[in-house]
Length: 409
Image (cartoon, rainbow, N blue to C red; front, side, top):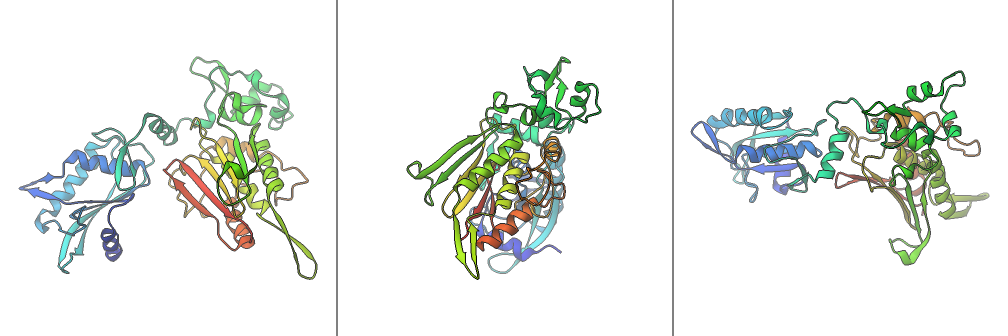
C-alpha cells in the first residue's frame, strides 16, 4: 500500500533532487502540456543520477495538487509508458501508479506517480544526456558522461581496473611485487600474469600492463595514473587553513603501501589522551582499526577512471575527513553501505585480499581485504564506541564520497 500521506508531505516541501512536479493539460485524447521530450529529459536525468519520483497533476511553483481528470488518467498513463519505451535509449523501466491525494481544500484529486529507479545504464533522451542536481536537470559534461558510461558499462565486458594501459609493457612490473601473487609452481611467468589479469592485450594484440597491474605491481603507479595517490594533511585546529597545517604528505606507491603509509600518517598525527581509572588508560583520538578499514575501502573502491581526482585524508582536532573519488557503485546508498556489498574494482579487491597485513599491525585479520563485508560496520561501530558519535557518509555532487569520523572527546 502506497504511503500517500508521506507523498503529500514531500509535495508540500517542494521539488528537490529526487522529486519533480508537473501540471498536466489533456486536450481531447492527447497530452498537450508538458511536452513529451521535456518529460523524457527529466526522467533520464533522474535515472542517470540517484533515481527519483515524478508526480503528474501537481503545479510545480505553487505545489498545489490540481489533479488529472479521472477520465483522462489512462491517456496520461499510456503517454508516460510511451515515453519510457520510445523516447529514452535504452528504454526505462519505471513504476507508474494512479493515486488519490487531497488538495488544499481537502478535496480528493487523481494524480500519477512515476517512480524512476537509479539505472544500471546511461539513458539518452531527446535533449541529450542529463543528470539531476538539486531540483533541476543539467546536461552531462563530456568528462562526466565518459565516467558514467565507464561505470555503468552496458556491455559489462570489461571493468576499468582490467583495462590495458597504452604505452606500458610487462617489463614495467616489479618482479618482487609480482611474486606476491604468482603461484610458485607456475613455470611461465607471463601465463600467471595473464591469469591474474595483471597484463592483457590491447586492441592491436600487444601485451600491456592493466590498471590493476600498475596499481599493485609497479613501484610508481603515478607514472601511469598521476591521480592514484592519497593526499594526507593534518591541521592543528578544526578548520581547513594552511596556516594551521602541521603535517602534509602525498602518499604514493603500490596500493597496499599507500594503505599502511596512510595509517601511519594518522597514527603519527593523532592525539592520545591518558585517563586514570584503576590504572592509566591511553585513549586515542581515532580507532586505528576503523581508520585502516576506511583507507583500505577507499583505495580498493575509488573510481580510478576519474583523472585528476585523488583520495584526500584530512585530520582535524575534532574529526577525520576522507574523500573518495566516484559515486557509489551500482545501487548502493549511504544508508545501505553497512548492509550490502558491491565492488567497483573486482580485480583490485581480489588482489588486495591476497596482500598480507604486517605481523606488527594488530588489525583483526591477516589480509588487507575481507570478503565478508565487515569494513563499514567496523568503521561505524568502533568509531561510535570511541567518540560517542556515528561517522557520517555523504555523497557530494554524485562524484565523491565523504566520510567524517569524529574524534574522541
